[in-house]
Image (cartoon, rainbow, N blue to C red; front, top):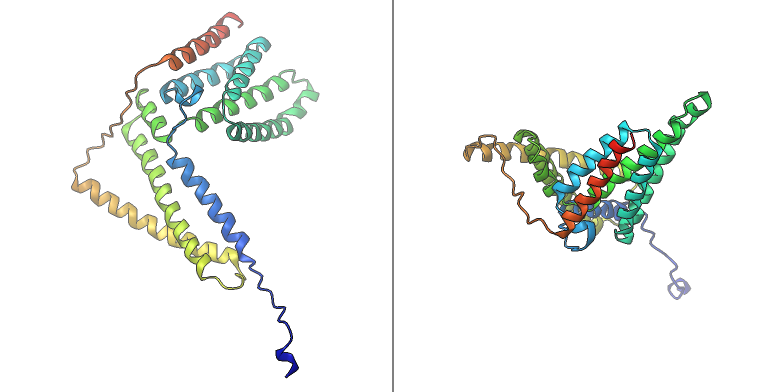
Amino acid sequence: MDWLKEKDEFELKIRNESFIEKTISSLLSLVSNIRRLDSRDRGIYRIHEAFKLYFTLVNIILLSLSFNKFYIMLNAAYVILLIILLEDKDVLRILNISLVAFVVSLLVIGPSWFWGNKNAILVIVKITISVSLTMIMSITSNWHNIISAFRLIKVPNIVLFIFDSAIRFIYLLSERAYAILCSLKLRSVGYIKKPYRTLAQIMYNLFVTSIDMSFKMDEALECRCFSGEFKYKIYKRIGKSEILYSIINIIIILGFFILR
């Protein structure tokens, strides 16, 4: 009976904790990015998305057409100024993605410099600046307001409707996936031998759910006599931030014609 007096050294190792926690963390990050309403009321965060969208598109187009070093340096200084006005976590995200874009473009385009392509370095810098401008607009804007801004440039209603519906579907499916993972975490004992098989089952469940949601949405639109016109609220009072942002971008646009 001495074995009853011995201390039990059994230790339960939960190996599936890392798999579930990482997946839940990714879903929460996705949901928060979609649902995020910009409550930060300073700097570039408060500028209307229409101004950011149009000037970003114009700057990227002009940057792609120009090979003037001074104009490219002007755009680089403009990107640095915008990054300085961002919060720390957003600065890290932009720098990480810009660094990846720089390294990839360097590996792809860089070798052409040795074969006489004198503009290879400029192209790499332009790609990095363009990616940074796009990321700044994406991080500092609300997705629904960006879709509303596209309406001002006469993008077809059906295209905007598809984009807006896709964002809402992704959000709803992410919430369902989060609920499934939480229930899986509560019911799991020990460890999951085949975590990716479990992930495949979750994806299948989400696929069936998305099909069911699409049918219900189609029936709802038909009952409401949807005519294809999708209206957005795009009005916002223009403030000092929009005026200052417009002046800076107009100076950069004029620099393209002066330095060409």
